[in-house]
Image 1 (cartoon, rainbow, N blue to C red):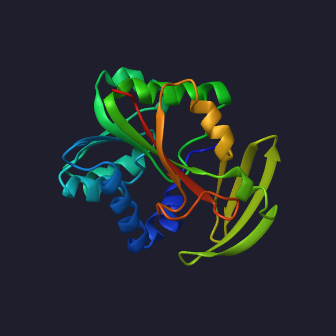
Image 2: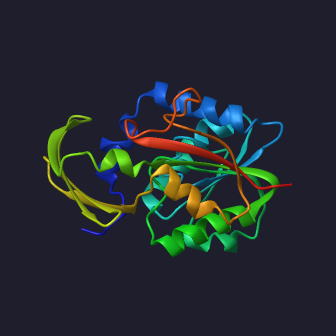
Length: 235
């Protein structure tokens, strides 16, 4: 069971069952903070099956998606033929040799690495943004996840799911077992809001917004699993 290699069953169970209303809200948020006329070229970090790339491309954005899951990228190319998709590791970002107006990193795609590598990734993102460019990062709030049970069972997308969680300091390990067979394993270094702000404090990136659930009216707190930061590279 390889860690952080999302299986076909995971995509079918979790990614493909996300309500359209949720995706629409996320795209509306991106459109508000990355308006097309100012940020026409977007790098989608961890694009998966193209859930965001497709509506963004359809809206007129030039989208380049990167992911290291070849099967997910195959689906993304079918879903969003107007976008460009590249199979690569986040840590090779500099090899793109390109500049973007903005970048997005959504749905628990941040924190896979150790502290040094996570910071290096943010520095690489800053490096590919033009002056005045923005990045929208959506990440798990550690304060929420520390309150969750170590084990729980439920149903998702017609599949029975058993989840086991364990912690190594601030690093969360999750094992997901499917009732029909098979499993996935994931781990992230999770941050609370102050820890994430400290991580980016010396990168010369200005925070223009922080909120929860892609809603500017919801403040980040331990009551909410996800938090979003909009960071801008100074001009």
